[in-house]
Length: 187
Image 1 (cartoon, rainbow, N blue to C red):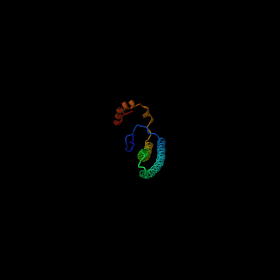
Image 2 (image 1 turned 120 degrees about the vertical axis):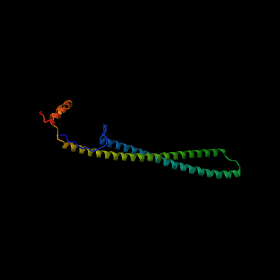
Image 3 (image 1 turned 90 degrees about the vertical axis):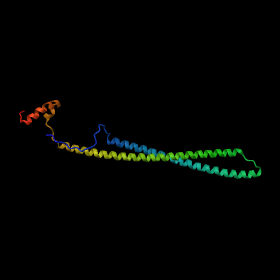
Image 4 (image 1 turned 45 degrees about the vertical axis):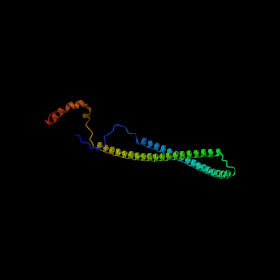
Protein backbone atom coordinates (compact mmCIF):
# COMPACT_ATOMS: atom_id res chain seq x y z
CA UNK A 1 0.00 0.00 0.00
CA UNK A 2 1.70 3.11 -1.24
CA UNK A 3 0.55 6.37 0.23
CA UNK A 4 1.46 9.64 -1.35
CA UNK A 5 3.62 11.91 0.73
CA UNK A 6 2.54 15.53 0.36
CA UNK A 7 5.48 17.91 0.00
CA UNK A 8 5.22 21.66 -0.10
CA UNK A 9 5.69 23.22 -3.50
CA UNK A 10 9.02 24.92 -3.56
CA UNK A 11 11.81 26.04 -5.77
CA UNK A 12 13.66 23.30 -7.66
CA UNK A 13 16.20 21.61 -5.46
CA UNK A 14 19.73 22.48 -6.43
CA UNK A 15 22.44 19.90 -6.32
CA UNK A 16 24.90 22.45 -5.04
CA UNK A 17 25.96 21.79 -1.51
CA UNK A 18 25.46 24.70 0.78
CA UNK A 19 28.03 25.50 3.41
CA UNK A 20 26.97 25.16 7.01
CA UNK A 21 25.73 27.98 9.16
CA UNK A 22 29.08 28.10 10.94
CA UNK A 23 30.81 28.86 7.65
CA UNK A 24 28.28 31.59 6.82
CA UNK A 25 28.66 33.08 10.26
CA UNK A 26 32.44 32.96 10.02
CA UNK A 27 32.43 34.61 6.60
CA UNK A 28 30.04 37.30 7.83
CA UNK A 29 32.22 37.94 10.88
CA UNK A 30 35.34 38.13 8.70
CA UNK A 31 33.58 40.53 6.31
CA UNK A 32 32.43 42.71 9.19
CA UNK A 33 35.94 42.75 10.67
CA UNK A 34 37.42 43.73 7.31
CA UNK A 35 34.85 46.49 6.88
CA UNK A 36 35.56 47.73 10.42
CA UNK A 37 39.31 47.81 9.71
CA UNK A 38 38.67 49.73 6.48
CA UNK A 39 36.45 52.13 8.37
CA UNK A 40 39.16 52.72 10.99
CA UNK A 41 41.77 53.29 8.26
CA UNK A 42 39.49 55.82 6.59
CA UNK A 43 38.90 57.56 9.90
CA UNK A 44 42.65 57.81 10.50
CA UNK A 45 43.14 59.11 6.97
CA UNK A 46 40.47 61.74 7.57
CA UNK A 47 42.23 62.89 10.75
CA UNK A 48 45.50 63.17 8.85
CA UNK A 49 43.78 65.23 6.17
CA UNK A 50 42.28 67.53 8.76
CA UNK A 51 45.71 68.09 10.34
CA UNK A 52 47.15 68.73 6.88
CA UNK A 53 44.36 71.22 6.17
CA UNK A 54 45.13 73.02 9.45
CA UNK A 55 48.80 73.29 8.50
CA UNK A 56 47.85 74.63 5.07
CA UNK A 57 45.58 77.24 6.57
CA UNK A 58 48.37 78.34 8.93
CA UNK A 59 50.77 78.51 5.98
CA UNK A 60 48.24 80.53 4.01
CA UNK A 61 47.83 82.95 6.92
CA UNK A 62 51.62 83.37 7.15
CA UNK A 63 51.90 83.99 3.42
CA UNK A 64 49.12 86.57 3.51
CA UNK A 65 50.74 88.27 6.50
CA UNK A 66 54.13 88.29 4.71
CA UNK A 67 52.47 89.60 1.57
CA UNK A 68 50.78 92.39 3.47
CA UNK A 69 54.04 93.35 5.19
CA UNK A 70 56.01 93.15 1.93
CA UNK A 71 53.38 95.28 0.18
CA UNK A 72 53.64 97.86 2.95
CA UNK A 73 57.44 97.70 2.78
CA UNK A 74 57.40 98.09 -1.00
CA UNK A 75 55.18 101.11 -0.88
CA UNK A 76 57.55 102.77 1.60
CA UNK A 77 60.57 101.64 -0.46
CA UNK A 78 58.95 102.80 -3.69
CA UNK A 79 58.49 106.19 -2.19
CA UNK A 80 62.10 106.29 -1.04
CA UNK A 81 64.14 104.84 -3.95
CA UNK A 82 61.53 103.61 -6.52
CA UNK A 83 63.18 100.13 -6.95
CA UNK A 84 61.31 96.86 -6.55
CA UNK A 85 62.97 93.53 -5.68
CA UNK A 86 62.25 90.95 -8.41
CA UNK A 87 63.28 87.89 -6.38
CA UNK A 88 60.58 88.48 -3.74
CA UNK A 89 57.72 88.39 -6.27
CA UNK A 90 58.95 85.17 -7.89
CA UNK A 91 59.29 83.53 -4.48
CA UNK A 92 55.86 84.73 -3.47
CA UNK A 93 54.35 83.47 -6.72
CA UNK A 94 55.97 80.06 -6.24
CA UNK A 95 54.61 79.93 -2.68
CA UNK A 96 51.11 80.70 -3.90
CA UNK A 97 51.35 78.03 -6.60
CA UNK A 98 52.40 75.48 -3.99
CA UNK A 99 49.51 76.53 -1.78
CA UNK A 100 46.97 76.22 -4.59
CA UNK A 101 48.33 72.81 -5.58
CA UNK A 102 48.19 71.61 -1.98
CA UNK A 103 44.62 72.87 -1.71
CA UNK A 104 43.63 70.99 -4.86
CA UNK A 105 45.20 67.82 -3.49
CA UNK A 106 43.37 68.25 -0.19
CA UNK A 107 40.03 68.69 -1.93
CA UNK A 108 40.67 65.63 -4.10
CA UNK A 109 41.49 63.56 -1.00
CA UNK A 110 38.32 64.80 0.69
CA UNK A 111 36.25 63.72 -2.34
CA UNK A 112 37.87 60.29 -2.27
CA UNK A 113 37.24 59.96 1.44
CA UNK A 114 33.58 60.87 0.99
CA UNK A 115 33.24 58.32 -1.82
CA UNK A 116 34.92 55.66 0.32
CA UNK A 117 32.49 56.33 3.14
CA UNK A 118 29.52 55.95 0.80
CA UNK A 119 30.86 52.67 -0.55
CA UNK A 120 31.48 51.42 2.99
CA UNK A 121 27.90 52.21 3.99
CA UNK A 122 26.57 50.39 0.91
CA UNK A 123 28.71 47.35 1.73
CA UNK A 124 27.47 47.27 5.31
CA UNK A 125 23.88 47.45 4.09
CA UNK A 126 24.50 44.64 1.59
CA UNK A 127 26.06 42.45 4.30
CA UNK A 128 23.07 43.02 6.60
CA UNK A 129 20.63 42.15 3.79
CA UNK A 130 22.57 39.02 2.96
CA UNK A 131 22.65 37.99 6.61
CA UNK A 132 18.86 38.38 6.84
CA UNK A 133 18.35 36.38 3.64
CA UNK A 134 20.55 33.57 4.95
CA UNK A 135 18.66 33.47 8.24
CA UNK A 136 15.34 33.34 6.36
CA UNK A 137 16.59 30.50 4.13
CA UNK A 138 17.78 28.56 7.16
CA UNK A 139 14.37 28.95 8.81
CA UNK A 140 12.60 27.69 5.65
CA UNK A 141 15.01 24.77 5.37
CA UNK A 142 14.45 23.78 9.00
CA UNK A 143 10.68 23.96 8.43
CA UNK A 144 10.91 21.72 5.35
CA UNK A 145 13.13 19.23 7.12
CA UNK A 146 10.67 19.01 10.00
CA UNK A 147 7.81 18.47 7.53
CA UNK A 148 9.70 15.75 5.65
CA UNK A 149 10.75 14.01 8.87
CA UNK A 150 7.17 14.08 10.09
CA UNK A 151 5.89 12.63 6.80
CA UNK A 152 8.53 9.89 6.78
CA UNK A 153 7.61 8.83 10.31
CA UNK A 154 3.96 8.34 9.31
CA UNK A 155 4.78 6.12 6.28
CA UNK A 156 4.72 2.40 7.08
CA UNK A 157 7.92 0.49 6.45
CA UNK A 158 7.84 -1.69 3.29
CA UNK A 159 8.03 -5.43 3.45
CA UNK A 160 11.58 -6.73 3.27
CA UNK A 161 10.84 -9.16 0.41
CA UNK A 162 9.88 -6.34 -1.94
CA UNK A 163 13.20 -4.64 -1.42
CA UNK A 164 15.30 -7.75 -1.94
CA UNK A 165 14.13 -8.14 -5.52
CA UNK A 166 16.03 -6.17 -8.11
CA UNK A 167 14.35 -3.44 -10.08
CA UNK A 168 14.45 -5.48 -13.30
CA UNK A 169 12.85 -8.47 -11.60
CA UNK A 170 10.08 -6.33 -10.15
CA UNK A 171 9.52 -4.70 -13.54
CA UNK A 172 9.26 -7.99 -15.42
CA UNK A 173 6.95 -9.53 -12.81
CA UNK A 174 4.63 -6.51 -12.65
CA UNK A 175 2.31 -7.55 -15.56
CA UNK A 176 1.94 -11.05 -14.16
CA UNK A 177 1.25 -9.80 -10.64
CA UNK A 178 -1.35 -7.41 -12.05
CA UNK A 179 -3.06 -10.20 -13.97
CA UNK A 180 -3.12 -12.40 -10.89
CA UNK A 181 -4.65 -9.70 -8.78
CA UNK A 182 -7.28 -8.88 -11.41
CA UNK A 183 -8.35 -12.42 -12.02
CA UNK A 184 -8.01 -13.61 -8.44
CA UNK A 185 -5.25 -15.84 -9.41
CA UNK A 186 -2.98 -18.08 -7.60
CA UNK A 187 0.47 -17.34 -6.50
